[in-house]
Length: 310
Ligand code: SIN
Image (cartoon, rainbow, N blue to C red; front, side, top):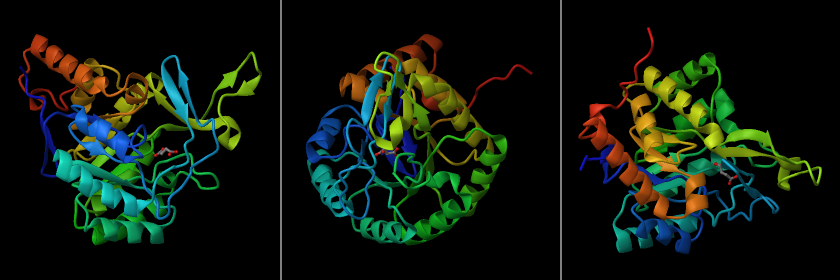
């Protein structure tokens, strides 16, 4: 069978498919479900300095081809994820990805310092959430992005990745790539949900979720093509930075397309919410099957080798 293992910043992953930060990864019980599945790593919920209840409910809604959410970073606070990382590591010995989404630079400095003494293998900085009431999507503030990356990569002794919001303009891709080049960024995860979508129920004549008047992050199949474009563009601009594709992956062929665009691994979000932990095995098996049908033995055989029409 084809080999779908990969590596990010020297951390070996048995397969290139694991869970995204966000769905079903807040509590120890949820994280153990990921640990017991064939997800090749355990990504934990983005954490803040203090525990947060998150936004008022309803704050998640399934759509025919995806999902919307405005969770507002409900989490147990960073100290608890440091504790959970050591429990998970001792019981399951899988790579652990901590996700950090402090609400201010000072918070991130404290949290990143503390994670130096944790069992997390990779630390994912998440300035891309569109759902924090009263805060902009920090990944769109390039000055903040630069300053934060400078601080957290200086402090952190572990590989630091960054989960980016989606970008839509080549000028913005270039700006962000320039910032990433300046700092020690071990990988990019691309993309967070597409911010500030609006879903309307025409019968009730109302929005689908409560926070922010219904404005929400969009995920699932609706965003796959934006994910592909972001992965491709960052791969072109930063060919030596591993990219973890995230957003709209429902099948092994979706993973194949992302690797072709340049991804080193992928993270599953909405499909994990909707299908549960069996999605990891199904999608890994589908990827192996598709690679076999094409005669590919490993991801390196086709990674980044997308053809254009010129
Ligand atoms: C949330 O908790 O609102 C989602 C987190 C994210 O978008 O990164």
